[in-house]
Amino acid sequence: MNNDEVIHAGKVVLRAKRMEDAANDYAWRVDEELAALDAAAPLKQPFHQFLRSYQESFEYPSPWSQRFGIDTLDGKHIGYCMCYDINLAFGEAEVGIMIGNREYWSKGYGSDSMVGLVNHMFTSTSLRRIYLHTLEWNLRAQRSFTKCGFNAIRSVKRYGQGFLRMEISRDRWLEIREEKLAELRREEIAESKNPSAAAGQSPASPS
Ligand SMILES: CC(C)(COP(=O)(O)OP(=O)(O)OC[C@H]1O[C@@H](n2cnc3c(N)ncnc32)[C@H](O)[C@@H]1OP(=O)(O)O)[C@@H](O)C(=O)NCCC(=O)NCCS
Image (tube, rainbow, N blue to C red; front, top):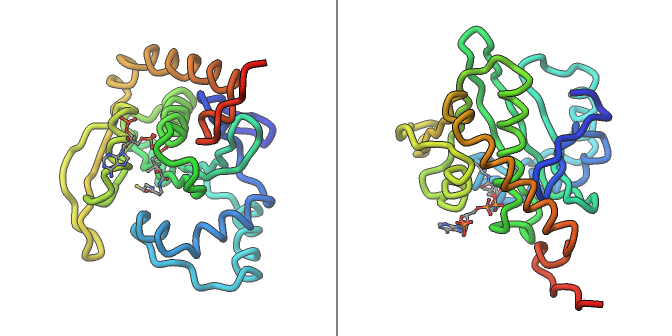
């Protein structure tokens, strides 16, 4: 995807990551709770070091991954998602997501982002299967991914932690695609009519 292209997905817009995301991404990476949900250790690096490697990731982008910032429709940066370990020979890739701003949890921003990502990857590549690993106890994530069409496949032990592997095949995606994209269109219309309601604030009073 070019830097100026965006993916509209219901309440969110996915767009290429940019340097200005660094401060939020850093805040989310050092956060203990967010790191635990991502099965990672919280980042201990100082910001200036993080910034240097962040800059390098733009200078030397990996051909095996695609990374996106997640914005609300009014342009607030609330998280990121990515597709990585893209293996076109096997037709498989893994995805991951972080809605770092907790105010946006459990309101459909994660599932909209994931539907947008899955649709983009199946549309723009020849991938046959997209998979992910989520911690067994991360029930919110599992529910969100199930809504997007992922199925639980099996339990996996990694680094002493229990994960659930979930997958969606291209054939399954093609079966549900129209329904999911129609849901996104309905959400986008509802969100643009009343953006504050979805973010958990009081709905705007009718004029
Ligand atoms: C996981 C994540 C992407 C999900 O996105 P989200 O926008 O918060 O979630 P969604 O609104 O799409 O879906 C959440 C669903 O789980 C439900 N849910 C919330 N908490 C739950 C819990 N403790 N147990 C079971 N279901 C729960 C919600 O009610 C909702 O279901 P519903 O729409 O049927 O009511 C987001 O919460 C996130 O990034 N969290 C922090 C990092 C993380 O966990 N990343 C995933 C690593 S694999």
